[in-house]
Image (tube, rainbow, N blue to C red; front, top):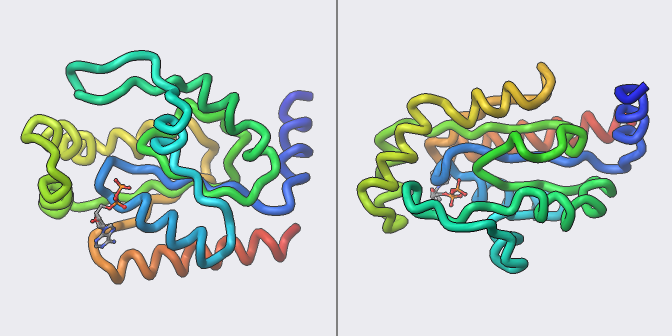
Length: 182
Ligand code: DAT
């Protein structure tokens, strides 16, 4: 009963919701913002939403970052996501309600490239190491595959501008197919 209800609700959306996730520095914001402007969908950066609404439950000294108030984020975005037409960008994926997303992309970047991007961003050595290790162990990919149904999660390389263009093309094609099938 519950599954049938979820499917019915999902199909009611006129536009799909897309999640773009991956380790910090893999290019989520760059791709998601560009995509949103290309296809005229709403760009939602969870980090920005948390900052604007002070949605934190504390500070993680080990990882040197704020701890996200996940329930607060869900509450604040529930109506917007129910409507569809959103491109959501965040470096974690498994706390969102599964029903929110029609497709999920996990960006992947080679270690040296990621290291250089994070160094350029001004992260300290420990923070760079934590993030590069996260990418090496494909933590976000595994977390995402465990959280969403088979067929929803897609891994995309994000090393070069050509990768970015291919990713944009691929996601745009998928969105067009989604529109054609609804
Ligand atoms: P994230 O949002 O995942 O933290 P970002 O979008 O801020 O990452 O990108 C980090 C940096 O890498 C930024 O300077 C833009 C660059 N970048 C992103 N994707 C890229 C790509 N496919 N090729 C080359 N540079 C890229």
